[in-house]
Length: 397
Image (cartoon, rainbow, N blue to C red; front, side):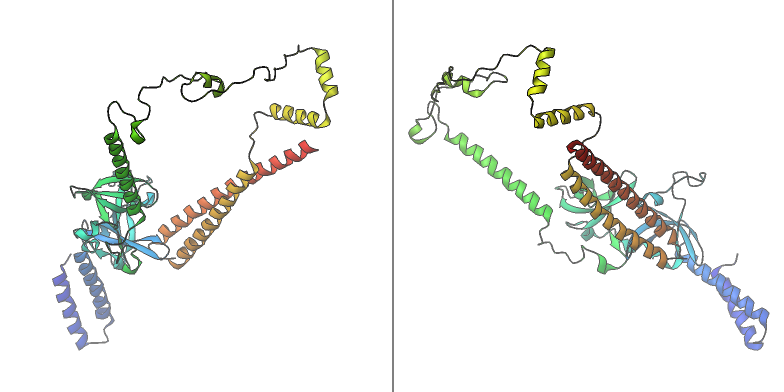
């Protein structure tokens, strides 16, 4: 195949021939083909196979982030890349890319050729991207998740980060961090953040540090007040000799040992006033019949309810208030999931026919599955609540 310089020379030659005979269709078609070949050669020179680049990846319906990638194939319209920082399951590269086929891992992510950005746009060598409060990508298992730097370690080669999708924190090396770059810098939440601003994590760390310092100071001050042979309090008249500790009898009341505790006073209890426990009656058939005849209707109803509950020990009893609270939370989650699904479907409609249509379709499918799971949980909880109410009505009847 001819080089870009040779193709350019051929284009100039054909253009000179067309100037002589402008109506020649064969020369016009040849010029069009040469122009396409030359454009393809120019594009391949910018991003040859194996080169690194940055691609826009949808984080939300209207929000894109730049991710590092490696070019596998490059054509005039589309490019096939492998994402080096996969943030979902569909883009995790296959470890046996050249020999594997049909697995669930990524064998190439298709993106528009005009959407490729230079690798330098990620700005990975800028030290400001690794300062406090900056958002970064950190690897957890096989996926990369967004986190925020909350503290710089003393050796300055590690960062203490907090995951954005959970409350977990960990310390990670700076070599395992990739700064978060948005395609549109106006969407960057950390853009323009000042060092003087205190976040929630700053208040938590400061509160823990102050509490620890005051606790240590109080303990040291208490130790300084101790003088051998003297008690605490005014004029040192506190108790000096140790008090023997006597464990309470297991299962008994504490008042029974007050007479034996020195210096704490005593309480005399008149044993004659204590109510005597009735002696257990012998369980006979006549005693059982007398108990049934003497029982009031309310007691009979309670006894029947207890019997029914004991017979249904294997069934699950739910608290109506707790069930209503969980049901309200599920309804709120269902509303949020429906809103997410509608935005995902709108993104699919807007990106129909583009290389990123499959990505938006997978996000819409995930949102639909989440909505179905929440609806099934709500239906199950409503069924349990209805059965519990029906059981109470039957018991009252």
